[in-house]
Structures are given as structure tokens and as C-alpha cells.
Length: 342
Image (cartoon, rainbow, N blue to C red; front, side, top):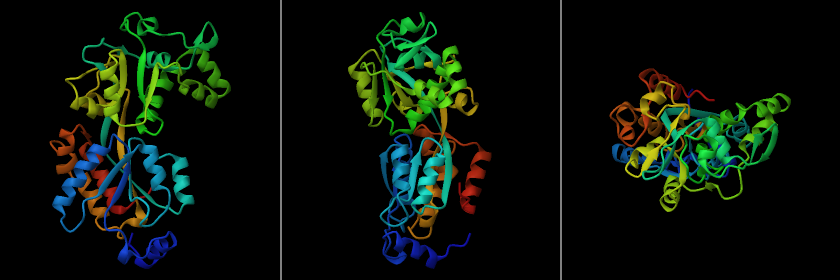
């Protein structure tokens, strides 16, 4: 699609920016704490490789928080890119459209896995989704009824789990990791129980709300910050089991012991093969109206997708990213160049 300066200039003026000629000259990025270290590496190297452009400014705030900022409108006072550890929701696209963000470019650049890990001197966990639900739920099915969660030790849930106190450290609701944790672990574990199946037949939304309700007796700790805060909780509490991105775990293997899920240990190979159940693709979203207005925006995105940056043997793989396959990368590059919206 050919870029039309007059139309975009008008859009920017209407949104509160001056004109493209005096528009902001630094790419502004916010969003997922999982994507943050990858985007920071790319931003730094981009600035060195393309001296005609300023290095992008990369912030965090979580996937949901970044997308909220992204959808605030078009113009130099709004961010250009939202990093996300999950696909954008229909409700978020609607919010964007209402604010004038009518075209969004989705870029998938790799994979990450969510892991459950404890301190290296803690017990060994062989978890199933149902264990995770039962450990963190506000109420659980028992004898055909929903009762306040009675479990205080993991061994009460399954006798082969460690005989240690339940302390589950999970991401706050601002993180994409929290949504993947719920959708890939908690809800499947909950929905597999006969009482919840019956509830879902009558009212699926009610059942999902039941599944996602967490206990408030101090055994579930929600962390609004990044994974370093979760790690600090584990350092302080030997019994704590935390939720991390695989890349963060890889960087802290000497301090953490990872759990298996359904008998599968998290690894690059298991995630790419689709065998590890709690894994996810990683994305960033570009505001199409800013392409050609904010200097270097498309160049940054193409640089991010280049094999030398995010492929096998790249700095991002060394930082923990699971790279796209060759065919996935080719499609992502073609979609970006064509500026295909979602």
C-alpha cells in the first residue's frame, strides 16, 4: 500500500500531533515484560546498525497495559509498538478502532514457554493442569459441591507431589503471562472436573469465572512487577512455586528447579513440536498510521525479523528466544512488507 502523507498528516494533526515534519523522531515501545529483554536487545543493536535513526525507547507494563497505551489513538503522543506475549484480543482491536487506530500490523517473532519453577533446594514437581487449578483456586469441587479450597500442602492434592506448603507466585492481571497461565493451565485443569463440566454446559462464562477465581488466604501471591520480583519471592520463601517465562528460567537455571507438565519438561524442542502444553508465540504490534511518519519504524520491524537478529544462533536465541521456523519467518516477513493488518 502506498503511503499518503497528506492523509496521515491530517490524522496526526487531529490526534494532537503537529505535523509529520516535526513528529517525534524516536520509536516508542511498551508492553510485555517477557518481550522486554528481547526488544531491548534489538533496539540497542538497531541503533548501532542504523545510525541515521535513534535507538527505540522500550518500556514494560505488561501485554494488556502496552496494548491499552497502543490503543489510545494516533499521533506523536501515543506509542508506536506494543509488545505482547499473547495475540491481541477482539475487544482490544475494537478499542483501538474507536480511538482511530484503524489498522494494526501483527508480527510474530518467536516462541516462549511458561514454566513452573521452585528454588533449586526445594522439592521436585511433576505437575498436571488439575494440580495447578486445585492449588490456586478460591473454591474447588468436593463431593458434588463447590467448597472453599481446603488444600494447604501439595501432597494433599496428589501424594507424589512434595509434602510442602502451597505458596503459588503468579503474574498479576497486567501480564500476558497471567492470561496464558489461566488459558493453558488453570482452565484446562478446572474444566476436566465433572462438576465444572456440568456448570459449563449450563453457563460457560460462569464456569470460566469460577476456574479463574483465586484463593485469598495468602497462598497465592500476585506479582505486578517482572520475573525478578517473582524470583525474589522464591528466594525469600523456600516453599514457593513461581510462574516464569522459559527464557528467564534459562538465565537462572543455577537458582531454579523446573517442573514438568503432563510428564513433559519445558524445552525449545518440546515447544516447537507442540508437546509442552504451556507455551506461547510472542508478538509485537505496529500502528500502521505511524509507518513513514515515525522514522525507522518499518526498518526496526524488518531488522527484528532478520535471521541474524532473531533466528538460529542469533542474539535473541542466546537470550532465550525460541526462533520461528524458516517457513514461519518467510510468512511473517511477507506479511510485514505487504503491511497486512489484523
